[in-house]
View 1: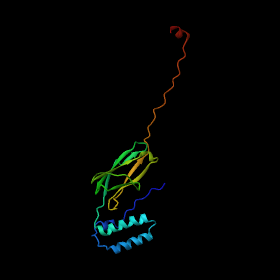
View 2: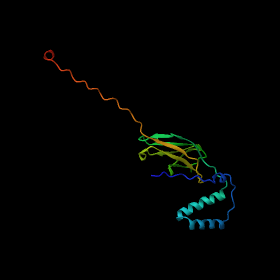
View 3: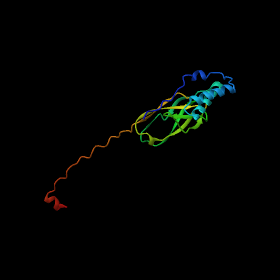
View 4: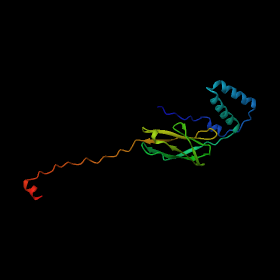
Length: 175
């Protein structure tokens, strides 16, 4: 199954330092009409419209940054656990993207958010991207989380079979 790749907007550095623009209601109406014609469905068109108007009228946005994952890996077959994403620029509206999909996210602080990892869904060693999406729709850098193969334990050597000594008639008498 192909792993989805998170899109990193090449214009985001420019948008982070842009002043807000004055956009008239008429201009917004034209943007919405173009999106309705060009988009695959109305739900997508509406989402794109909200994002575009936020970018045009909102001014600078703060991009979240991911600096580390705790833990950074897990062994396949381990129990479920919480993944802590460390960084900066997190808010209560931040969403963790794990392997390209949005995850239920718990806000811990401006420098930490967390989500649960269901280990029963992982069957092969792999590396997946982890990023954080801001409330303004800006995606952070991604860091890799590794699922490693199960640890191989060496089995103890098989017991050495020593055949019993045959007993003599005299040894049987003594018993």
